Amino acid sequence: MVTMQHRVLDKPLMAFSVPEEIAKIKQGEQWKHARRGAVTLSKNADLRMVLVVLSQGMEIHEHHAEGPITVYVVEGSIKFHAADEELTLPAGSLLSLGGGIPHDVHALDECAFIITVIQPHGAA
Image 1 (cartoon, one colour):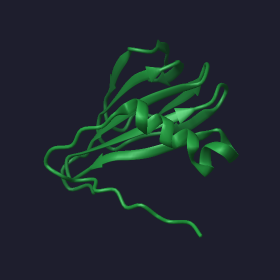
Image 2 (image 1 turned 135 degrees about the vertical axis):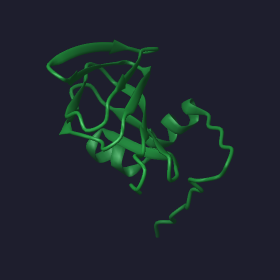
Image 3 (image 1 turned 30 degrees about the vertical axis):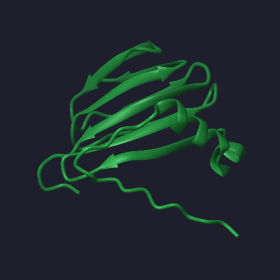
Image 4 (image 1 turned 90 degrees about the vertical axis):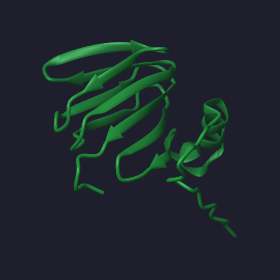
């Protein structure tokens, strides 16, 4: 039997242990089968924060967010392609990208990064 744990996503004040969240992802079924995983840390009318963990060579194919985003690389390194530019981002790197711009991500090695999406007014 699988027990679903419900996470409160929209409290006024939230704190996370990122290493613990990464460990939880790596213990999950999605990681065991696909060698990738993600968890939404926070989501409200203004922003969404998602922790993503990818094994080496995994990709997130081209997509876009309606609002602007930031990406903070916690572990490993990624290649980020957007607006005819390609950036290699090691752990500790932070980038910002305007809303609506197509982008993709390639894991250069096992990595973890946090995406923050600013929700445009009227989006949910």
